[in-house]
Length: 278
Length: 308
Image: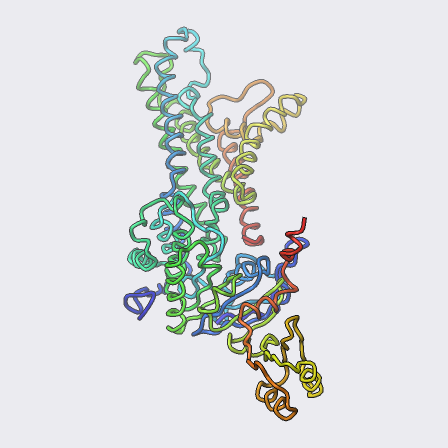
């Protein structure tokens, strides 16, 4: 009697090399992200906050703002992207959980026993999360933009077009910002291996430096300010040069700074994951 | 075949595994036995490359575990702690692991049938009982139909039927020529399952042998002798080089001479024997004796504990 297979050799081992194996690990991580509820909660929350907020603002603002106020609005594209303040939290949580839930559940032991090439596992997670968050980010930000426009009266001075200077870049930039934020969350999760710790670190990094900076001298605000994560992100998804002493970086420079934060966190994660005990 | 040599692992001030060397041969069930905290789980984590040893090395079929691409085909492991995400179904959990090693969907169905989880396959694993969780872990271990199986306390949480199932499974896996290493802190679980034992205490190797050899080597086997002339017999036996222990009821526990020799000695000296029997120490006794000095947590003797 064979205890484990109906027919011996029923599970033939694939003979593909490193590339084939990488594709298998990628498929596994893709299956993982698709089969937990937290993914759907995070995506549903991001969609709801982005699109619903934009639609509500599209309905309410033309009635509450005077024509002069509407015409004098600098950063009009900031209105359809108003939901970003909350949706960024949902996407950040998604990025953190994709790795910390493995540690909290113990799944990481099964994962790393099945794939002892730990950096390959983290790389597959990075790819899958990056693709999912970029798709969700871009889709919901564009949906927010169109929802806002759809609810505005046709003659509203708040109407804009994707061909207006900076508008298409700001909408796409908001989507890309969400993707990079998710990856920053993944990197912090890989470093800290605790959901609570990584979320605190992520949102601390996002909100706290901006608060502290406001207490510092003007020269600091001007020199350090543009490089803070939140301000670099605003450079990417707003139209305008910033307020007060704070001058935004150029949009894509801001994107570069964001990517540098995420890259640094992921790099530390890649180094630590293969050095530490699982 | 699993080979460990000079394996050591320290966590902070605690030495979990201390210069441990052993071999787990194919074709038999090897019991990995030791009191709680003896370093069994740590050793298994070292074998699987989840933790890195401070010193020494361990190989599976001559290769370090971490050098395997698609290791599920070579080694299947069930770790003591839960290692699945409670939000995923049993089927999805197994498919995640299968995918990462290029194993197809049909095999997932097969192992679910094999461990008796086919009807619970689509339920969230978070709602599983301890026993169902163990079955899911065993299903994961069998995914790649591996030649080496490493199971940490597999009967934990299983009902009697489940325990019997595990025993049969382990034996049939070994009979197919596979290497089976199974840990436990209870000798009673191993007596009927294992062919060989590796006994550890406080991270150190205490014994490594086939079950029969382990028993034979024990000083626990002795001859029980009852005689009206016990004092004289004891003196004669001691003169012959035997060790004699006299218990309160007057019976003698004799080691170092055979029962044949004791009978002959009594007859030659005109001593009456009321009882002469050979006592085999049970494996349980042998295990207790071997690990007595190494358990981390001793309980007070019942008499002392009961005293107010």
